[in-house]
Image 1 (cartoon, one colour):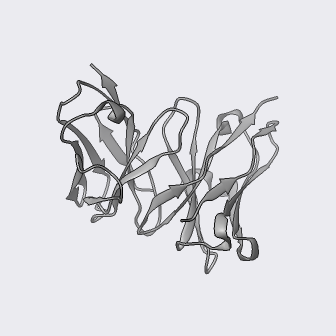
Image 2 (cartoon, one colour):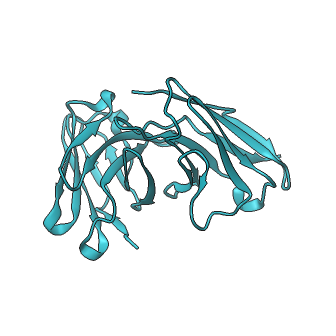
Length: 107
Length: 118
């Protein structure tokens, strides 16, 4: 299976900060990458698909970029509702592996 | 919009098997496939496998090959996940999600807690 590595594992930030999370794939996945937000006790929520496509209803402060093996999720101005754990996921033809997650905490 | 409704919590002994169901509301599958993802307490998300609801082809995570089986009943728009030879580290919340290869997971079930304990 393709391995996905996220960094950092934990991120402390304040409301209004610009936040960037990085995800690296062990081999090229083209643009078959998604980002999810998960809050405690809840199912994950799809934010971005195909590396840079914003899911319907997701605020535009979220954006994604990258292709091949290097990807980023950016939150342009962190809001109180954004404190959560974020996961990247590759979903090519054979598997759908997730990164280990990045917890965004209040500074 | 499709909703995915999963079966209730399970408590099993080590060595046993568990089957969790995932029913698509509206008697239709809106997408090509259904996937299963689990999350152990305090841990991250782990992809388990997926099944095409049209040709029934499956792909499983290498780690779970031989222990997990996904099946689908098109007549009831229900997908089943069976996990065998349960161990304590299989204790987790199990999620089904609408999604497959080249198709991000846009709709999720509510999750099913499976506890493995002697």
